[in-house]
Image 1 (spheres, rainbow, N blue to C red):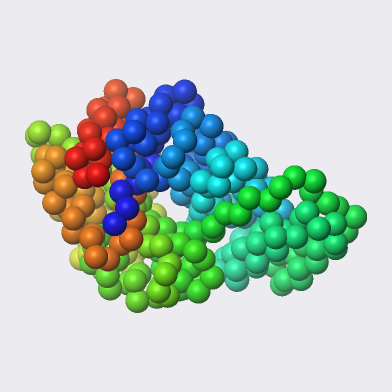
Image 2: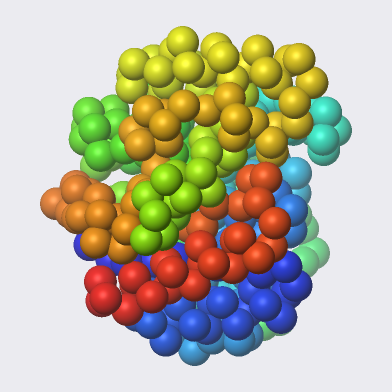
Length: 327
């Protein structure tokens, strides 16, 4: 099982330094999300500041850029990184696309399938000078009189999925699957892996908080669990873990006016223990080992929701120290 990491930085310089430290500790890949920063620009910064680890987006939003723009950015990142780039794509949820980005939301699974087909077609043919025409119901490409005069460095495409249909799509067409930020070994074994074909890189995301005081470690991770529990779309996931009532409590707090990043007080210890890796370094190492034999890659990330930068730095430093031990 590959040990990989999702670095954090209050500045881009700090983000790159964290990526470099994780690479030096033995992390085989570095993953950049798209929420408070652009995933592709963050990936470019980290790629330029590292030399060995893969650099991937986990995830870039698939519908907020055109497929051609996504393909161009991926080709540039593959070149910049010397072939170390992984394009990780996800749909996001309806509210994020429509309300935050003003993007039309329709049949996301079918749209993602067509988006990936266009990206691959463009990346493979942009240098030929021949017409590039890909017709789809939701996404199409019609390019003539165009030739990209640069070498094309190939890149794999990974897809994020939580529900069965999106996970099945990843298993069918992608080089890898990226789990949601909350993914227990049981969910991985029972709900995800049966839908992935052999050879697909199963990347399990694991929110991780380490402290000599397990209660302090758990407290840092509670805000992250609360952030995702506030999303009703994830009801099936929480029900699978027998956490429906606990999710309802979080949603009630959110609807009463508590910000999504500040729901830690509504999150019981039971939810944190079930869905995140917290405790002492030895306890977290044991929890990481619980994914071995199932995940091919584990992505460790520090909690950030509702935490001051100093708290995130502590969490990040301890994870990187753990990576040294694990690798």
